[in-house]
Image (cartoon, rainbow, N blue to C red):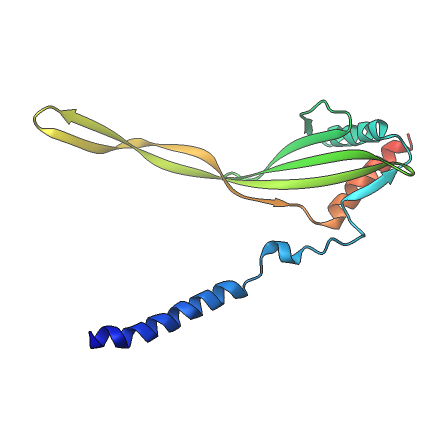
Length: 171
């Protein structure tokens, strides 16, 4: 009993240290500044539907597959494979809303990372009265597994996208 009494204060101190370390890490949302200047928006003198049509054409011209029919929301997807065992999907969403100059075009890009993972298969054999046995199967199964996803926040990425849309607007 005396041993337990000595261990209790030590256990309490360790618990407090763990809680203190966990609470000192910042949550991701705490870094959000909600700044008035944003790389995710540009303006067009065209009406929202016409502005999004330019965005659709810009994405199509760069090899993106467009997957929706809403004239004011464009979603494009493009696949990349930087390494044999690694794949990246880049999804871009454009939303065109009315503004005092014509339309505001909001863009959001998200990249999803996949890795090729293999898993060995097992096969089982069961015989009544004797029991069962499980043996490893010689073939491996490979599949792409999602390993991460993040919003693209690089202002240069959005500048290049909006510059292409601006170029198409002048044509």
